[in-house]
Length: 383
Image 1: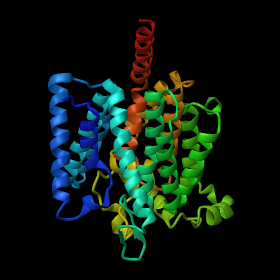
Image 2: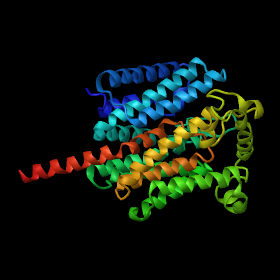
Image 3: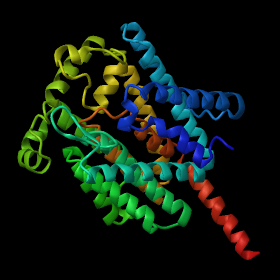
Image 4: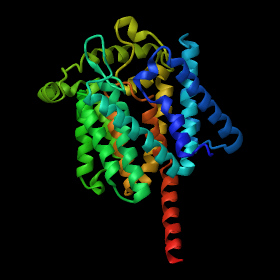
């Protein structure tokens, strides 16, 4: 059985999803071994047998190496963080390899995410599997913000699967998309509700009128400056407080952003490394930046941020080359929505996000496979 087989994909990716039961003390060691075993086996196979290393992979490894170096220099590197980094690299390389057989990859992802999303939706309808210390329901995928991380990529995965396999949207993938969107809305996450609205707009509007990923990147950079740096949200008080149900500080996030922006100046080149306690030393109950860009700067400084930017520019170039193709439209918009979540959450190192990025980086290969499949179908019909 090939490493890119859909059921192998299902098995390899499953332990990386944010399923609440995987965090139980008696189960977590098994999940860790599961991750290490399958990812390390994948790395060995890819390097020694297939050699599927792309420029994108090399730059990704360079970025993670900068995070690792920063952690070493700042004394924050632990065994747990080291293995987390290794697992992350292995995960990304494995997905890159599976791009050689996109039909199997997207099928495995569709089965996995569809299965998990439906199970999670059942826990939403039944008031969760448990409750937090403050009485908030906890679902299969965790709390309200955690649900969005998995439900969002489920939408493009179902969309791509249906269009790749059937050349149109079929009823079951549509149901998965609708359940994903409803799950995001019912999670009652302010940012999630905004994302659900934007996802609905994508499904309603003709795809041809949507801009390219280059435009999205520029708009996102402007939004980051306006919201995180210049705090323009005070001009939209009613929308934020009434529609998104957040205060103008985004539940205190603006205080964290200001603190990180001022603190990063003392270690601007390489940041403070992963596992640092800079934020938790100042905000007792917090340990993250609650912003994707600031997270990258905190972990790897300007050097890491530049490599990260180059990765996005590579993706932008490839998506823009096929900007009229529906796959490019879906991936561009989906990555944008994840980046919007990244304005208020630390999501830029989530594996679900990197699934979309890696698929986008290999869109040329995917379209070639689509064209080859179409040619083979025509040949069969002619015979």
